[in-house]
Image (cartoon, rainbow, N blue to C red; front, side, top):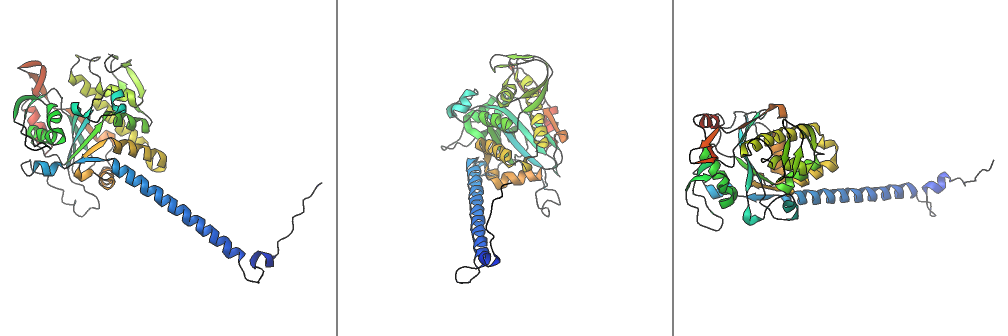
Length: 355
């Protein structure tokens, strides 16, 4: 047997230098300390960069300043809201899906440029006091409404328009006019505004690993490039976006059929988020956060990671099975069979229940 001889290191050699001073252990600790400090600095720098990057991603619009005080009253906060570490009062959020931002990613998914901005999806999300239940109300983009006068970023304001397409408010006056038109239509104050663009939605779905959706009928839509048989499907971001946009391959080809698919997607996303423990997977958490913030436009109350995080934490007990999805009651417009108007008194009763 071959044995390798290794000279023994004496206690004296291990602890003292040539002058008899103990250095070996202290030097080792010092090196370890420097390495640890360096690692902590790098981690802190990385975390700071990530926070700055995600924070800088978010676009915002100062809707409160633009609209002033001539708006519906805010919801009365719950009695315990002021004492709670996080807000618990009722909340109304206007959520728009749009193709408002230019760029290769949006164009590849069917988006337009900023001069041709459209809001293809509009939902009022009402969170009840206590923030454990919610109602999502979809507003058909083909609804004819009275579009109020809206302030313009360039100065001046738009004229009041009667029997105008609902989604023309966003095209004409951006988020400010979209919020004002929704408040005029519903009589409900929008506490927050959130807008996500085409590519951002697709990236979010991909960052979550896709979503599971069950369709009730075959979908064959050459315009959205979506072809699905009736049944259960696991969709990536591109197909999920196509499902949210499709309408010509289902039902009568109107916006009403598309809304049903969009509501399925809302539930599917909530379920996917609930099933994904992002806190135990920092890499995926960052991908999700980056996908969301890079495609987000909000009001100034949510234009920071802190604001968005606090909102998310306040909704931690809101699960998918506690979210109800409905559509604003509508009937065919007398002036145009391809358009709809709010059905009264049903629509008014719905909005009154959310105040």
